[in-house]
Image 1: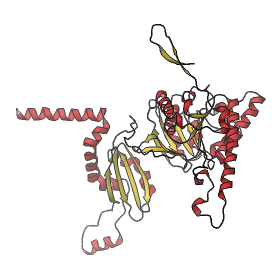
Image 2: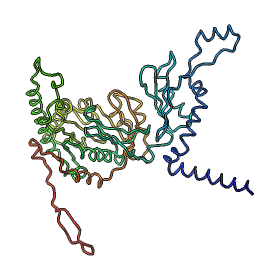
Image 3: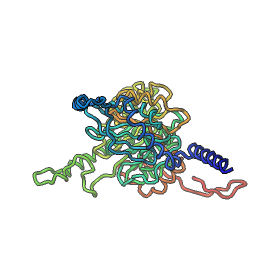
Length: 454
């Protein structure tokens, strides 16, 4: 009888664990997964490293000693485990490489290591000379994106925007990567990524400037936090030229305040706005272009001249705007040479690259073809049922899969309204300051009185 009770209890426990693993993988990982994974890695480590070709043969000295002592030849040596650390999403394994090994060998073997250790994913990076770090994820962290409870936000221009496939937070650092390109097909999550940017930037001391040629349907609901907005190409051309003028004025301020002489402290010598004294430092500006193709298309000679003005101004901003504190975020479905002269030059200045799901391989090549063929392949494999998933890379060739947590338009609007008092008044952009609608009460037949905008 007691045996049956034990068996029934064991079956119930196993079923509960399986249900927990399916419905709450993070809870399962913290409760059971960490212990199982550390046991697997510890038991299988030597054999897995040998099977993956990540061991080195014994040294001549060890072979000689074994021959002299009439002992069996020693086995190949795997890299030494310096540290094994569990995290809320997986394991971090830091390894000391043996002489003759290369960090690229571990990068090339990550897929085999993933299967051998029964993990969801494995990524490798070199920490310093002779030391590599394997970050293993125990479950699919991009299936249900949940940002950590404690996220580093700070007060600068480094903001959290998504979750990486290794469980870490992906940040958008405008001072390190001033300009970026965001590609994605319809319903790929491109707009959600943009809302997340605006939501996080709304709480910072920064001026937001937007160009939304879809009649303003994406950015104008967020108007209370924007210093300038344009909803058509004609207004966009004038707005961009006003930003170029502000950039030139800012450079004059920097030159006037440099005053380089032999007695000037090194810390006070600067070539950008961040070295200026706080009272003189212009507020940084983040320009968001919602659909760049609408700015590059033309149907007649007048629109062609307007396009040339727009592209020229954009190229100047991305080439020279960083030191003046002007950062550009360009979004679009396609971004290639078919949009006309100057587009390739513009793309070359966009260091950051983010590509959501695209409809064809050519679109992926527009984002990563000039920096990383592997990122192109990863972009084409993004499933349609995972909106918000993207590949993020930079001009150095590094890339990673990310997924943005769902941010509704209401959440973004609430953030912008909450921080509306932070919206700076910029004299050069005063003509483009959005006219905010007043709130009035209207009577809806059969319902209570509801607020409406007039």
